[in-house]
Image (cartoon, rainbow, N blue to C red):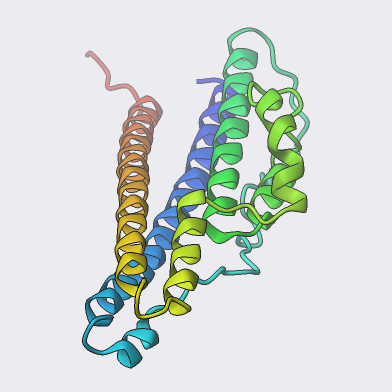
Length: 228
């Protein structure tokens, strides 16, 4: 196995390790959202008989500012300049494209879950921009919104609006406001479940691919047994 082939494997393993970290971050935020959603669901059960107690649970989903990555996230410590050709160049470009797409998707996802454009901006910087990537057109369309405005899934916005409406609702419309919030919470639950399933499946697939590649790499490094 050539030095460039080894580097290509290391490059892929480095990228997928970063991707796993990002997927864990998405899962962690989804877990926080689920906790907030369950608290709201509990609050709704108290609206009719214990309005004052319900108020303690009827709080808008909080935004978490200041999200940041680990110091060495996504960085390649090997500064050696390499010239690729043939198959090695194709593999290198493929990993580079996967990295751009993976970082872009996770950056957008995290920003919309946290209500903060920082995750997207940091991943954009780490990836060296997305101008030459397959996601360049999409990135151009949403870049301004993610940076200048507070990005947030509409389902989360709707729940927070529902909480605000319920807290100021009069006795005559409180029941309807509670039902409306309950519907919005179900929609948010479905969004969270759908994303969680995709994240879990992707995490499992990446882990499987990494394990298979590492096993194959180890086998190739083992000395060949003599046939004598």
